[in-house]
Amino acid sequence: MRHLTLISSICAGLLSVASSTLLSQPRLMVNNHSVDLGIIHNNEMYKAQWVIRNTGNDTLVINKLKTSCGCTSVKSLKPTLAPGDFDSLKVEFNPAGFDGKFTKNITFTTNDTSQSSVILILTGEVIRELPRAE
Image (tube, rainbow, N blue to C red; front, side, top):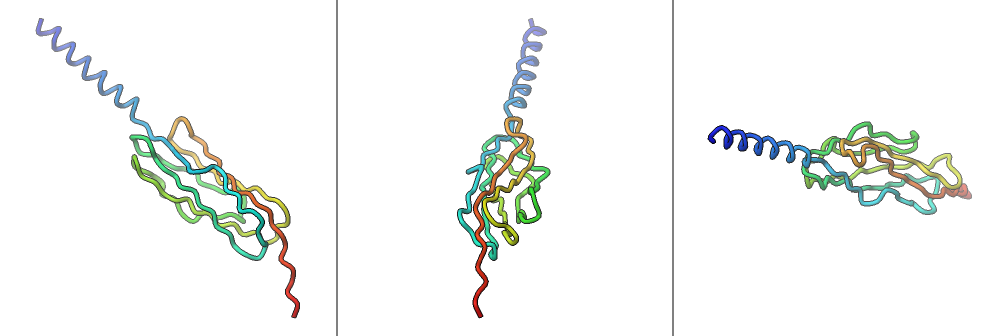
């Protein structure tokens, strides 16, 4: 009888550890997947920001952060977020040389199995600044 009780206790403990491991996952939450800058001039820098949050119960890992072109630069983002933690992904867009509507992507990967690849979209319309009369 003792052996049966011991085996039952061991099995219950292993099941508890296995289920807590399976339930322990990071969860990415982004406040918005796209930002529209509206109508902008080609002679100024523009900024956009996304809030990245880990709503899971394990560390969220962020990898391979990149932009679709050199006109868009990422200013900061922590490579890991603890459960409940958040950070701001700050992006600058330089519209010099652009004219008309644009769409730029910021991409990264995570260890959140439901959102392993993330694409954030920056849109707007550039109008050329007229040269100033001297």
